[in-house]
Length: 267
Image (cartoon, rainbow, N blue to C red; front, side, top):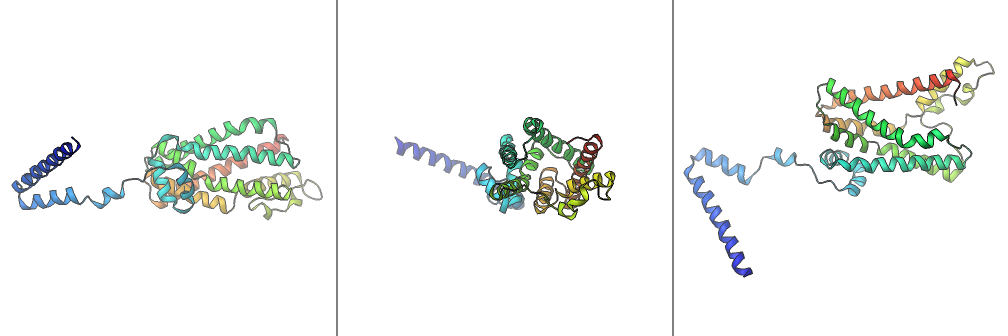
C-alpha cells in the first residue's frame, strides 16, 4: 500500500507538471519566458521581504549583534513578544530597589507600587507618542509592531541597570553621579555656602537630566531609530528626527518633574 500511494502521488505530480508545460507551450515566446522566470526564479525583492522567524530566546542574544534583522523579526512576530523585555525590565527594577534598600536607601511605598504601573503606562505612552510623531512626518506605523520593536529597543537600558546594580552589590556603595552627572559638582547642589536655593534647584535639575545620558542611552537611541525605520517605513533622517523629538520631550518632562518636586519641597 505505501508503495502504491507513493506511485499515485508521483503520477499526480507528473501530470501537473505536464499540464503546466503544455500550457507554457501554448503561450507566446515572450510571455512564456516571463512565466517561467516568475515560477522558477522568484523576484529578489519577494525573498528579501520575507521576515525571519521569531525565536524569542535566540533573538534576545541577536539583538546585540544583529539588531536590524532581530527588530524585523519582532515587528512581524507574534504580539506577545513585548512581554520578554517587559519582564526583564520589571525584574531588574525591583532587584535594583532591593539592592539600594540594603545599602541604606529604602524605597518609598509609591516606588514599590508604581514600578509595574509606571513601566506599563510609560511604554504605552512612548508607543503612542512615537506613532503620532511618525504620522506627522509621513510614516504609517502599525501600533502593535511599533510597540513590540520599541520595547526591544530598551535592552541597552536594561543592560545599564544590570551593570549599575552589579556595581552597587559588589562595592556596597550607591552610584552618586550616573551618566554625565559628574559634570555638575556635588557641592553646587547644596544650598548654602554662597549658593542660592534657586541655583541649587537648577543644578539638581541638570544633574537629573545629565544622569540619564551615557553610552547605553546612545545605544538605545540607535535601536529606536532602527525600530522606526522598520515599523513606520521612514527614511533614516526622518526616523532620527522622530526619535530625537521623543527623547527631547522625555527630557523636558524630566526637567518639569524635577522643578515641580523642588518647588513643592518633595523628596
